[in-house]
Image (cartoon, rainbow, N blue to C red; front, side, top):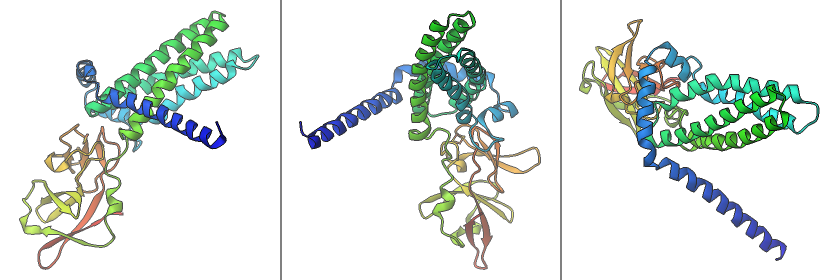
Length: 306
Ligand code: FES
């Protein structure tokens, strides 16, 4: 086989391997057999995790982005470092400490992951469930690895650690698929502010807007949530930053400071209508908001707030 033919063969093999991986993840996304388990688990999580400050903290509302992804760095970093040290002589104590630190870091990682998982679309929940299963296997294996090392059975501890690393990498692959291909955790509204050109844009006649009742209006191909309350008009991107739910179908409520808020009809994220800030998750990203004014001829104009 000449060199060019060899390169083509290797490239085709790589593409086949990548195709097989995405076949697996596509299969998980459509694995309806998982749905019963998902229904039971997510009902249980929602019963235990009631709306409030703890749930908001687990979602990452105070951080402005999901708390789960950065927390995964703790167990993953510790356990991968332990695997490297396990290949070197004289590092027994350091490896053991890293395995233990990874186990401690797994606790908040699991809690934040469970909270986020309970408010996802079904296809995302299927991938999330298998991702969690892989991580659970990894955690069990690392727990056994720590117990073996603690008892002085270092060879068994190392072997269990490497087995845990395999499960960790498989689970992480699915976590990456969930975050980047299925866009769980990413803001689904952030791009709106960049799609609207600078300056004022005519939206509709102000007097056609009902008072106190949100409606949907289109600015080109962008969907907007519009709420008129007396002489004031509040305008936000309509697609919820959590998973793109239609905010104009949401409930209007007041927060503790009597600020008007909209509650997303899909998973209950709550945003202040005056600036799109998040009051309650699962959304963590601010909803893009627009400044509004009414011209002399009664046309409502909007422009993105910087
Ligand atoms: S789409 Fe999930 S809360 Fe809005």
